[in-house]
Length: 330
Image (cartoon, rainbow, N blue to C red; front, side, top):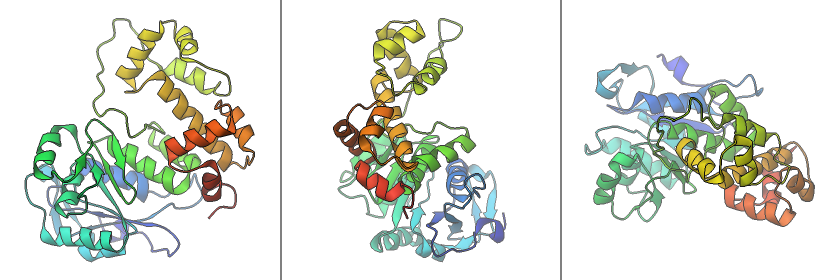
């Protein structure tokens, strides 16, 4: 990898994302960050982020010696980040380099957004920026994390935690969930959906879903939820209920509930509500300013219910969402 390929041309009006890559870092999460934040977006018509990698050493040996990373910027590049993604390493008991921890502290002090994928929460906690705050990491390290950092409010069995200016994700694929959540937070649901389509990845899995989803071998040849999910997504403006979904799938509501838990890690009602809120966001982004119309077309019913559910799911009101992501925003 050359320096030219890892460093985008700086743009003053584009949010800058920098990844610190340290010795024994995991390649998968580095790949996730590059896919979500670093690729050009011709399908959107503009670049979403200015992306770069940095490392405390000229040559960085990645996890288990898989390969050596060279040609990236020095650690000083972390001081230019609007969002700093910290190192995540499988050797969670090994102390992080003081220079890396200092870079994380400087970024936090100047108001940069910090992101930890998988074991990245250990880096953030060791830097002292998670004290008294909520965070998560891979479930297999939950006990170790709690023992070492008792002042951190560790959230087990969730995909990711958004604590404002510090965000953490559980292992592996949850890095993509959190990355898409960040894109959605920065650029809205329509852009996040476009990125997810290019990734061929689920556009929205709520951070509160379980990390570990059991996938038992089905008794029948095909118990996939895909047909009923596609059917429901075409009818979100209709008064769909869980019994309606169960009837479409030709199973009982109890069986449908078990399949949702096993395949998606959530309940049918939670999934349906999330899809309706996502549709409401897209309608607002496309210019629908009448919230009662948004509520009706997304199946949420009333403007009051739209306000309540959007605030719960996105953290902001429909009015604030329109100001941030509606036509002419930004």
